Image (tube, rainbow, N blue to C red; front, side, top):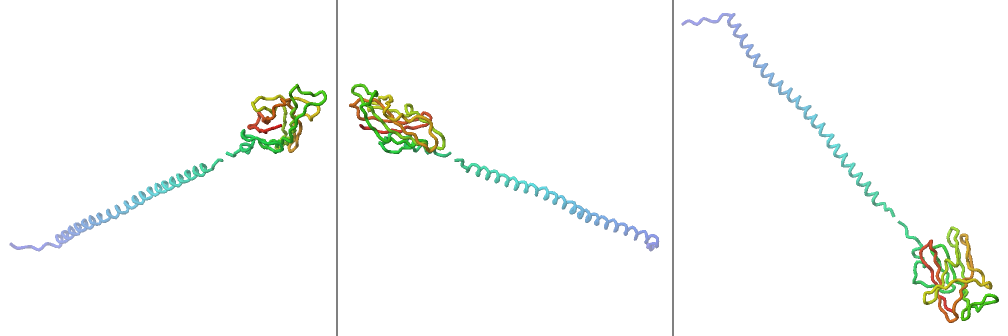
Length: 227
């Protein structure tokens, strides 16, 4: 069998076929590489996009946390304000203590309104037309009231003052012409009013209790009287 060498035309076609095969292989391999590159480039923005989306969440969380702390601090500050309520000076006044009995000549303050002094205590058998009943005598109490408040005050002797005996019986005030009238009327701030409280009492009764009160204010003042 005799082998005939290929003609130049056949050799050229074979070489062309191999070139096409090689070209297709190169293109295929190149396609694979290009796909990886494209995939990588495509994946990167997704990752960046995911990162960018997660960042605001963290910022929002921090913002929410800060807001919560601020509100809590505000509530604490408001709650700590104390709102504080003040004690009235009249609560410690001697007028609020019924157990305290004062003496003649003692200056006593009543609810930061009055300073009251029982100046003297006297008895009288009567004078002129002013005569007590048989077995009685007049008890004369000289008192001074000073308005120590900043407002005008008013006193009514027969209403604010009360005299009782040791049995608790109230003795009505009377009027005698030979003594100064009882302290009654309006008194300007820092001014005084003075007068005599007159009572008809049994001659054999020697101990009494004088009290001062005001229905518009709390408390009472007491004086022990012995004749």
